[in-house]
Length: 218
Image 1 (cartoon, rainbow, N blue to C red):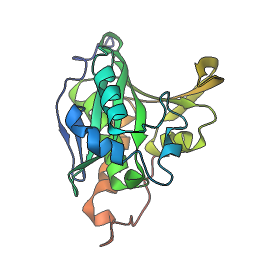
Image 2: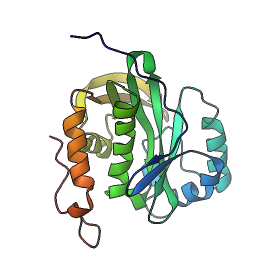
Image 3: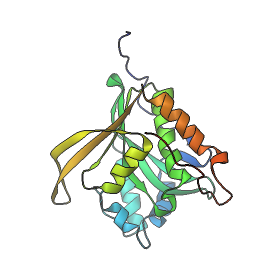
Image 4: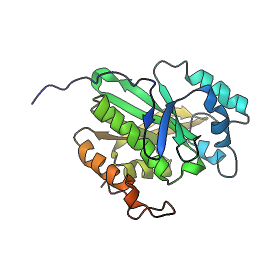
């Protein structure tokens, strides 16, 4: 067995293009779209599990973008729905360890327009494919509050494996947070990639964009 190798590099600020989705390096020109995706009925609730609070104005979003762009241990992207050309969500590369070939997707805010859509699934797929196929990472992580049932269900649907719970891991909005850890690894990726490609094929959707068969990652 050959010795494990580090990844080629940390992710760079490049565009990742899919059929339905484009991931662009986060920038201030995404401010208006991301604010629009953060307001309206049901949208603030999607901030419940994030470390930040729902923005009250475009200025709040702009200040947040300014802040995260200064962080040298994270790399944020805006999720663009190619059908509209608008940013409908955002997430980040976190815990970036090229020397160990390990990386995390986190800070996920996917607006209501992305919910249960091809855009969301392809956004995850583009990150995973870039990590494994382009950069040579061995491990791709997903973490969430242990009480965040929708995030845990999403992790399992996407093909991440549950690894365990870090008890009293964070103090989160004045409360103690247990964190559940999930991962997928390079050994599992070829089969997962094939299933993602099958599910994302236009043949799997009807004229209204509804799936004909579910994503089967288990």
